[in-house]
Image (cartoon, rainbow, N blue to C red; front, side):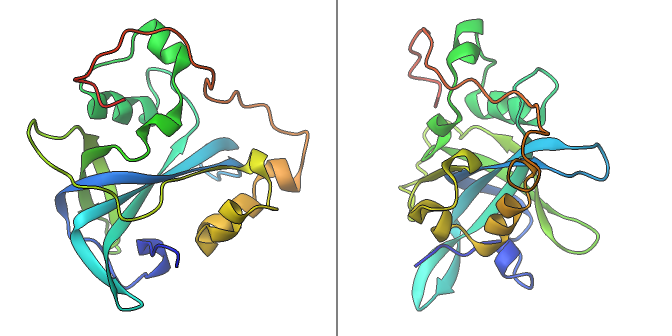
Length: 199
């Protein structure tokens, strides 16, 4: 059974406010056509909200929310801004060089949800957990997927339909050899361990 997302149930929206959230899915959806800012390499991060529940096939499950990011860790990027707020401090040079986004899978934070003019829920901010807060364990399986993995695998087939459609529309698949975005660093580099930082 796949997880349900708010985008799959348009009439059902997560309540506005600040929620405990656990990252359970990261999907690199490749380079997407963007009418506002041109072509951008994008990814989606999904969080489950353990204290907001929904019945799925008779099973009590957490609601989930998602946020789109450009694939970039430069200082002005939304992804880096949210990761720094989540960590509680900025990256060192060595941490940034060796950072792997999959490290956030299964990690908890707090997200603030607001409703736009159409009444749809969106993530306004991401911050770390308050000290001593227990988020519990994620109920959804932890999933990492990239368009580099192709379509012929179970991970792709298990993605929600709306995410598969976005993957299918990426320029890497529809217009190969026309993209030039640099991927996030994916090779581990040396860094000091700090148990107070979640990743």
